Amino acid sequence: MSNLLRSLALTTLFSFTTPIVFLGGLLLMLWVLSLLPLIAFVGQFGENQLVEFLTIFGNGCPLTGLFIIGATCGLVGGVFNLFNFCLYQNIRVRNP
Image (cartoon, rainbow, N blue to C red; front, top):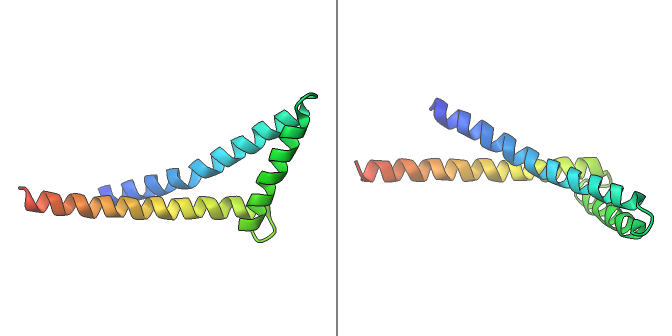
């Protein structure tokens, strides 16, 4: 049982942090692009679109939207881990 809890905690943690790091990195990259003179409009447009996307999920706050997306991915990762654990237990019981 401790293997399940350890695996579930790690899977949920990694599933939560992955979209936050990815979207944060994308936002940082777009911000850096907006500082370059020739392609500043691309960075500004992308940054505005990403902030608007996060604002939709966050009910008006982009940071809340980022955490909502992270929590949803963490929940899905945890459920997927539980599914694999149950499937593995059923296969192990059938094939001794």
